[in-house]
Length: 419
Image (cartoon, rainbow, N blue to C red):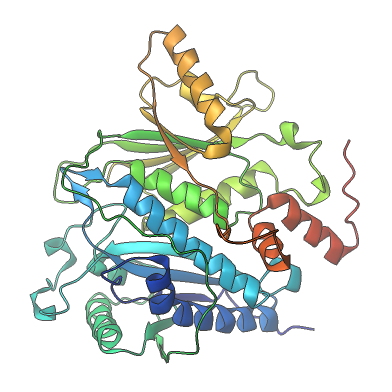
């Protein structure tokens, strides 16, 4: 029987700057070994203590805003490839709920510090305003996240980044932050390969409209890496706010499918209820945006009422950001009841839903939403033949149905019957 642990383990892996030529092969070469080691160590803890280890992977990112507009295509490619790498490494090392050694991975982007002149970094958080969703290193170091272990890459840049992080964190320590265990990860042998996709860095001509209210929808059952990519890119569509500027109101609306619509899902006995799925979505977005506890949170439950929004939970922060989770019963949800929403993020599989939303808005005389598509994660290769077992294992990790099936298999209730 696994030993018990007082609280959920929470770790941070600090990665050095992206390689100049950001092909997937270069990203794999730079990061796969460190990510693999952190995943395996976290999985061992999860298995030993019957828990799930939280692993925040901090990645320095060059400034990709132009006139406060996010370069969506660049971040789309970057996050898609990094989450694909994480998923592939989990597949290789059998890190999965099926084995009771799950690791909850969250990619957190922060602004690349000037490693050539670390003393130029400000000593106080007030001197270094945070930009959401790509925060400053100071903001990351001084947040109230209770990491107990920080892993870094055993390299010159990795050590310099670690020392800067520790200096900034130590300058803002309070009683909530315990002592950190520091672990330097040495390079290992060659890591597994995906197809070689080149990341296109943002060009000076790229620009997008400001979006202060964006929406996304889904079931979000047993939040997996595919969901995390979708939610991350939703946050990156949102216009950033610098803390020193006037506090502009911005909102992320997440339509979460109501329980009644899921009654015929396979392995429904292992479906999470709406409140469990909502809590997972809000926790992930809070981690991604390096947010402390919300300044205000309200909840409404109109389960006996009518309409598309029976249950809703709204969390607000002092920066002016609001995360609004609502229960939905169709493909439209709040996109046709809230005119202030200006952008919709969806997967390429639900492209038709975006078109239907804009048709409904046109009927009301409302402006069409800007549609942002997120490509599904895969490990396909143009030169590959039929999918192999490794490919299937990869796809299973980004399938809520498959996760429920495995949970059912573990508990002996994997019948997959529908009502």
